Length: 266
Image: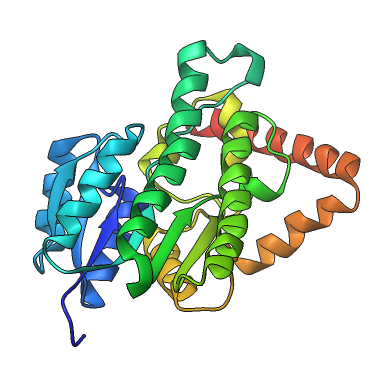
């Protein structure tokens, strides 16, 4: 890479974010890892090496995104911003507490929007790329994870519309949404006994963070606005659009499969 460029990864202390940071560093960017857990962020940056550094960040704070953008720009042109931070709440949607609803909406939706805004304001006419981590749940019914799915559908919708706004404004910034199937990270494995999250354990072998990160970086360079990983799962879940009722019945069967697997693993 001929110039000094930086990349920001929110929620990069572990899992998908850590691996995306690693691959961005390998590609030649100096990576700024942010996480609400400052110690995790610091460990991740040390593991990535190649000049990576870290800062504590709560993505619910819009001003914090601007501060992160300033810090990234101080060490090179901000070329990539990855909105990866997110949380998952499982169970019947009407049982979620007020605090749970507020947190998942603020982190998964407002955090992404604020990150995009800070990135675009900083990249400006120099251009760059933004990657928003959505989910395959944005495209299909996910009983037990209804609120989580709704937040990821919002991320996907926001991403596609935002690209239209950028094109209209003539700004050379690409924004993309990655929609992975279940990934074998702590966010998933910690739900092994949570009946509300049974669908997470109903399908094929979970993706690895490495697979997801590789697809994310490929997507940033492509003309696609969003990508489902693996692609065959995307074709399958989109079939539910033709008959949502049949889709719900299929998901009910899958949920029972996940519950059986959870009981066996308990």
